[in-house]
Image (cartoon, rainbow, N blue to C red; front, side):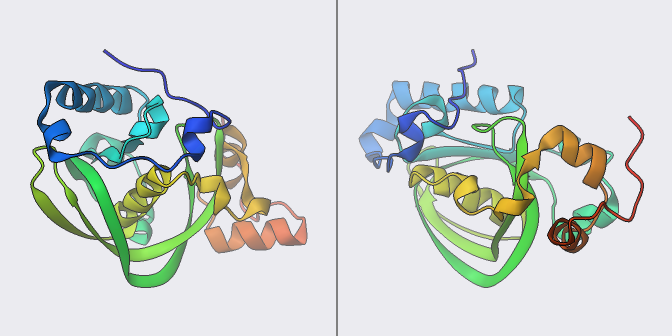
Length: 206
């Protein structure tokens, strides 16, 4: 079973989600919801999904960055992003703090704003204190792309969407990003856009 993902403009994406009690979390309803969110995220496909994205203002998100998603990705790109596989897990009632606040700028998108990407600066490293799917306390220390995923999903729980943080001049259709800017460094993209000139590399063949 999969659920529709709500799109930007739905009021639920601008609400502050409410915490879940341990009793709620242990109940069959929330456990089933976690399973459905996992399948919805995988079907999208995506690396994270917050409950508000399926219309429920709850402090709950699922995360997974599978090895399959990394296949065929330029190793240099993986290294730049400090990206590696992350097994499926659940975060409930998370509290986040930056452990390495040095900003890292990369393109990102959102399942609730289909078809667009833009550059967002986020902390390189974070610590998240939360409950897991069984209600047990958990502390997560993450860097790189995993830290970005956590920040993105936890933003959703506070009514924040990535476009609130995007460098507006870099917001673009995902297809046009792939056509014109795929393989171009973030620095060159912003310099080219600011100078109103095309990239210095040829677009990839379609």
